[in-house]
Length: 196
Image (cartoon, rainbow, N blue to C red; front, side, top):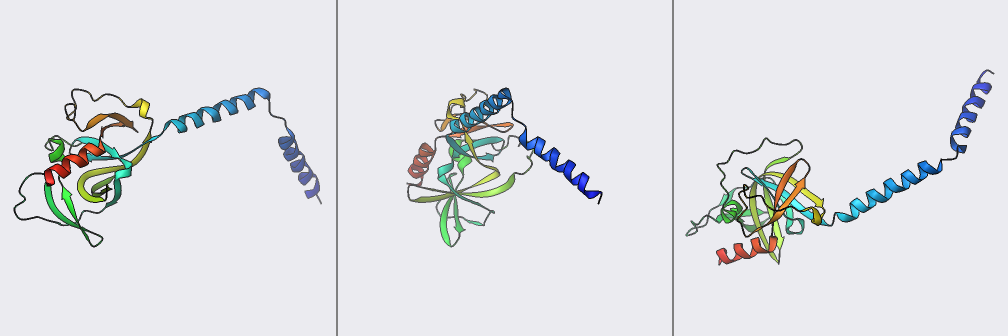
């Protein structure tokens, strides 16, 4: 029968907690915090797929990427010895042209790779699907899709490999690293011209 006073004490503590009126200042601070967070999220209108080729972190528009899968055997094509086409790869029963994106972008893959990040996927086949066309390329590491504020895109520094590239549109911060943004339409057009 000693449970009754303890139970009443707990109920009165709960009643006091629930019955406590919030201070006006606390409510205003909470409202400001929520409004600021909503504004921050509304500004994230860009979406980029981030990956690494050699020592360069790059980003393509996320709408271009259909899937990311384990590497597959690439079958070379006769009479295709140029640097862009690696060959054909089987993606879910469909033969897909696999390109050497680093060749198109003229990246130096001998540059030392950065330390591998946590929770990142190593060597992957990235499958693009755009303009009724499917292409694939091998990436050394995949960071995935990220949203960003387009007004926060910086200029490409002159020290970066893509500084003179016509495919580069800027640099975006993704977590602790910067990724060079690529113009997806220009990349596709250049690939199609070279595939002829």
